[in-house]
Figure 1 (cartoon, one colour):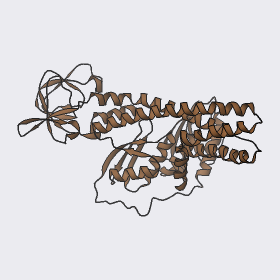
Figure 2 (figure 1 turned 90 degrees about the vertical axis):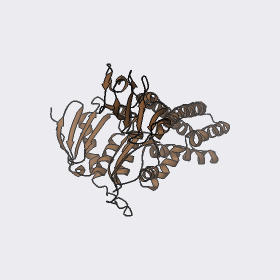
Figure 3 (figure 1 turned 30 degrees about the horizontal axis):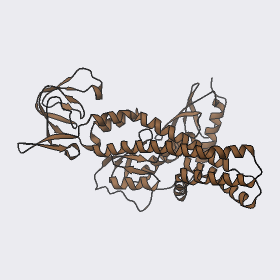
Figure 4 (figure 1 turned 180 degrees about the vertical axis):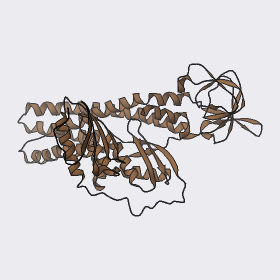
Length: 414
């Protein structure tokens, strides 16, 4: 049944029980407004998925019709689009000019510090603002940012740093292993922060619910809340301040405003000895957010299991053929076009093509093919797969992020 609502800022072109597609003239060929629109919509839990095509101004939304009726959704969309249409578009920095003589390169970096899908959209929008970037994608689930354009890896890292996130290299096996180690550290740290925050928050909430009149209890609330707000995760305030200086905001901004307001209002009341105290609100917000972030880190760790398995598949060393000699080298030292010797039962150290010999290769872990595949001269092989009974020589065709471990990150995004 068609909706009776008549919007002013978009055209409803298709609707189902839990899905609508709209055409928005103000978003057509305007990626920045489109990203802002997505960021705002993804703040609402009733809206499950937002898919946009800025080239034609098309937006498709999947939503929970039980908690958000379609009429209400369309009203919200019209109001949000009305506000976005009034926003002045900020142009890319005038001091950055694309050097057309520079080669077009593609890079992928691992990102630290993203806390929600809106963070990924904000970072993607910031990258696309740079005139040197032709295309950019940021995947929140795998925490990987990829760009294509006339800028260096260092330039890309600087853009990411200015928005408040940290970029890490993921070219070599050792770098990817370091990322996995940091992932385990973040999970352990998130768990530890939540436990300490909850231990300190529990008595604060108990005192707040009991509402005692003795001032000693108020000072106990202050003493327990202060380390929760500033020590458990003071990054909320630093990230919010960094984004505020750039005229931007994300989830950290909302948390900083809420916690700062509750704590800041309570402190003068405590010193005056009169007025309401909201220390339990400040401590509770931090504790619940830390619980959510621990659960998120745990879920992201499970999502990256495929990447870790592919990395574990890769051998630590390879046999390089050079000047008639066999030299054992680290796989991080493999260069393009190197000739590598693969003996029976060994794992293939990198993607390449066979230049000598014939054998069978077990590709089940990567492709799902249960039967070993025959490889002879000219055939391509995938790094991490196991060689069969023959001896082959391959020529390296991909190193670093071009290897199968990178394809594992792509699989995880699916």
